[in-house]
Image (cartoon, rainbow, N blue to C red; front, side, top):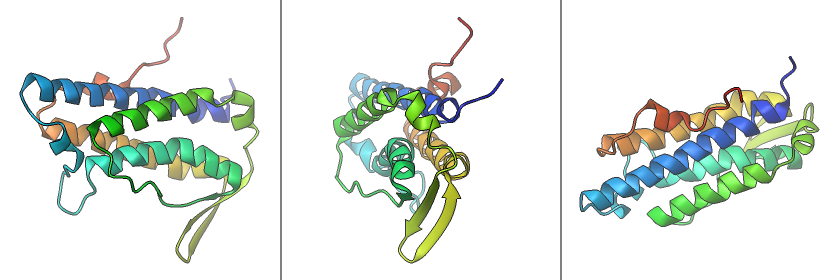
Length: 173
């Protein structure tokens, strides 16, 4: 069975971004139930030298929706979204991410296979073809930032489990 570029990327982005939306919802419910301010979570870091929840969620969007757009354009760089999102803004960004991913057409994503794309940051440039960029750069970053967002919420007492991270699995009908 051949697996398409769409199936290996967009379908996985949708699954995990949907999970991120779910655990952000659980985070808000935890705050509401316990009289906590969800805004305190936005700048929470696991360690001082790590970026906060806000950056993790921006990166979920960046390494999924923006990665596909970067492949289309032939160039991808660090996130440019510098907005100071509040908790509701992070939830809205994830909802926007899921909607944008669901709007992608299988044929348009599959047609990107073999296309040249470069990751550019300042004077550094890393050349890829689309599938190698998505499989070895974009997806690992996407999962890293999704897991880090999950871990930040867990570290603050949000009752989450592995299933919350996995999201809606694509089981046999």
